[in-house]
Amino acid sequence: MHLLDPIPDLEFNAAAHRYRYKGDWLPHSVTQIASPKTPLEMERINATKDGPDGWMARGNAVHEALEKHVLGQGVIYDTRWGDWVNPLCDHWLFQGHKVLATEHALVSPKWRVAGSFDGLIETAKGSLVLYDLKTVSSAKAAKTREAARAQLGAYSLMLLDNYGISVNRCVTVISGPGVVEIKTDVPDECHIAWLDALDNWKLLQPEW
Image (cartoon, rainbow, N blue to C red):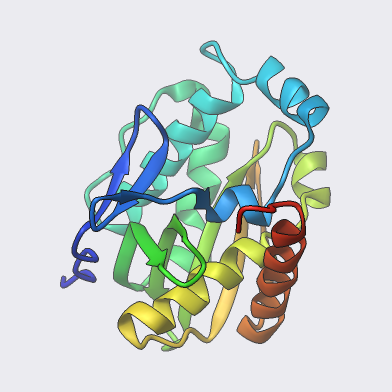
């Protein structure tokens, strides 16, 4: 198995949750631009973030389990997350695949942004799929969760810029208890969503 080489001079500082490229801190992240939040929205999100049953613990556990499964390393996880992990690892998308990257950081100096995508695989049918995993608290939320088009569009364009890789599909994988929802988009639609989000963000950033 040969994974994509890391981009030289690109670092992620977990404590600050910021990226640095060639020694300089980047002012923006893909998530920040693709999914901007108001102070009230952030307050509501943070209210359910912490604790053993918070969304951070759930998200970290399910992401780690899927990554290990995709890499063929075996899956060990807290049983409280079994209803999320088991259907996800059993899903057809993650059977018979070839792995190109997981939890991989990308950068765009021209946009002054960086971010990390969850996975890039070649499916059993030969399709190159860029995916982003989202976890939700209920089966109902899994049905209504929007696709991460702008986010995937940024990663798709940066894969092209950094590695010359053009993906066939951008996929939002939504994991809920007992359910997996797959939302598939063509890359061009995601590229447009990202560029629109970037334009909107620039309008609010006088220092850009």
